[in-house]
Image 1 (cartoon, rainbow, N blue to C red):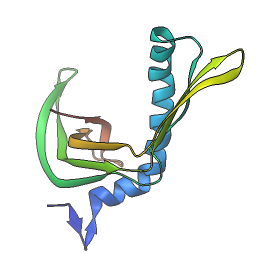
Image 2: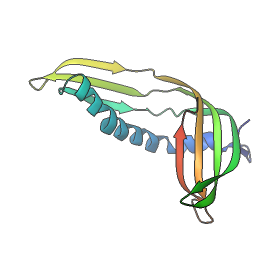
Image 3: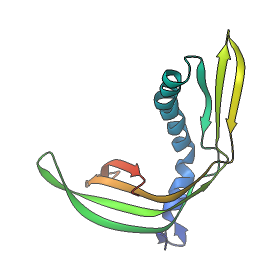
Length: 142
């Protein structure tokens, strides 16, 4: 069911250790990609004040793996595809502010975020030196 090694759930242990970095990446991505959309479509006064995934990491259950070949720049390379059931019931938070004359007029908080679904993680272009792959893709396949 899980990738177990010496009694350790490898995938979820890695998620646990990387979670602060994943949350920081999420915050930067939301600020760079979502906040401009909010400003364009709602108001230039909208600010994404807080966006983080909290301290409680997501879990992947029933993880399946497969190796496959992909052509890249005219050469074939091997990739590893991991697909599992994502279950995130974390303590993440998002806060959107609408300001007028420098003061907060509207504050919207999103808490108790729940995300469930199939999640794919690809380790692409496997190589012979650490970290043993050249890139990573993460997406919802459905």
